[in-house]
Structures are given as structure tokens and as C-alpha cells.
Image (cartoon, rainbow, N blue to C red; front, side):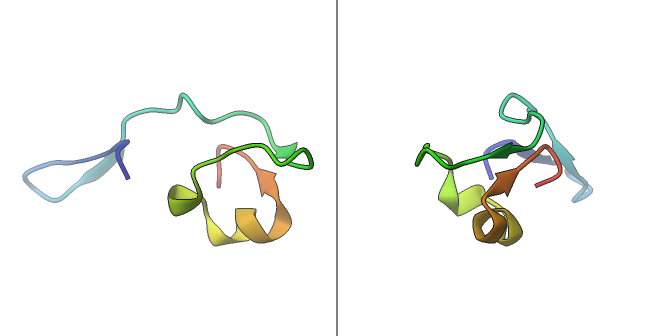
Length: 51
């Protein structure tokens, strides 16, 4: 994902929380990054900073 940085020691760090927010239910057919969305978020259609 484009918001993950990897150091020379192979340590991964999340660099941007701009898309994170409280859990919301997507019932209006809104757009979201499917390639980077957690499988459980796609199944439940519930998104949060944890997913």
C-alpha cells in the first residue's frame, strides 16, 4: 500500500491516517480503495481505522 513505509531494517510503519475515521456503514455505494480494503470490511461493509 502507498501509505506503508519500510525501513532498511525491513520495519514497516503506517505513514498516513488521512482516510481513517470512526466506523461507518457504506449503504450509498460510496467509493473506497478495494485493493487496499480489508476482506472483513468488504464482507461486513463496515469501515474503521482498524480495518
